[in-house]
Image 1: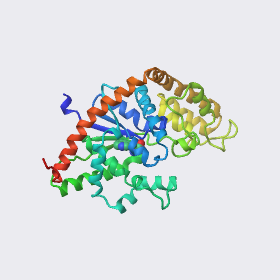
Image 2: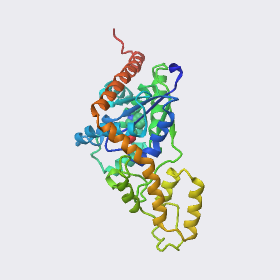
Image 3: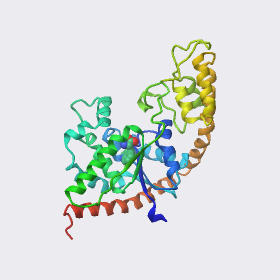
Image 4: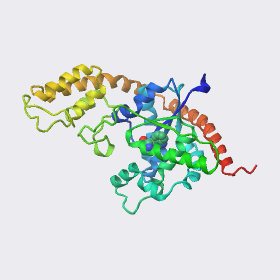
Length: 335
Ligand code: TRP
C-alpha cells in the first residue's frame, strides 16, 4: 500500500562526515522509520553554502561522504529517496514565493538562527542568504508534503516556522496545497562533545565520527572529559555533565548495568579508566561493522552517485507537482 504511507523529509548539511551526535539525534530514528514511511533524505548543499559560500570544495566533497555515512549506518536505497538539494531547483523557486510571507523581524527572532549568527560572529555582515535559510528549509519540507520531520532538538524552531508559512500560504491563497508537518525529536536530545561541550562540532574538534576506526575511537574516549574533581579512584564522582555516562546512556544496551556503574562512580571506587574502557568496547562493537560497510561502498563511488541521481530525479517530480499547485494558487498559471 505505497499510497497510504506517510511521508518523512529530513536532511543534513554536507559540511563534514556525520558523527555520533547525528547518529543518536536523527539517523537512528530514520533507520527505525524507513520501512513504515516514505522517506526523503536531503543532502542540503544549498543550505550548506549559506554559511560556506567561500568554501565550495568543502560542500562539494562532503556530499558523497554524507551519502556513504547514510548507506553505512543502514539506510537502504530501496526504502529511501536520497536527494541532492541543488539539483532540485523547484526548492529555490518555492523559497522565493514563501519569502513574501515571512517578515524580517520573524527571521531575526528564530532562536536557532540567532544562536548560529552569534556563533559565526556575522555581526552586521549577515549574509541575507543565511538569514533566510529557515524559509528554504520550509520549501524542502513542504515540497515533499512531509508529515513528519525527524530532527535534532535545535531544529524545532525550523518546524514551527515552516508550519507558520504553511498556514499563511493556505489562508492567503485559499488553498490546501501545503500541509503542516510534525517534528520528531529523538529521546536523547543531544550528545555532548568529547570535551563535555553541549554539542559535537567539527570546529571544536570534539566529535567521534561514524567512520572512525577502532583506534581513533579508543584515543578519543581516552581523552574524554570527565568529572575534574574525580581525581583518585576512591573519590566520589559526578555523572551529570559527564559525557562518558551520557554516551553510555545512549549506546549501552545494558541500562541496568549503567545504573549500577553510575551509583558506584558516585559513591567512589570506580575509576575513569574502567568506565572509558567499557564505553570504548561498546562504541567499537557498534561502529566497526558500520565502518567496514562504509569502506565497501567507497569502492564504488560511481554507484553511490548514481543512487543520488536516481533519487534526485524521483524527488524532482514530486517537488514539481507541489510547485505547480503553489503557482496555481498564486494565479501564476498562464498556460
Ligand atoms: N538544517 C538541517 C541541518 O542543519 C539540514 C536540513 C536542510 C533539513 N533541510 C532540511 C533538516 C529539511 C530537516 C528538514 O542539519
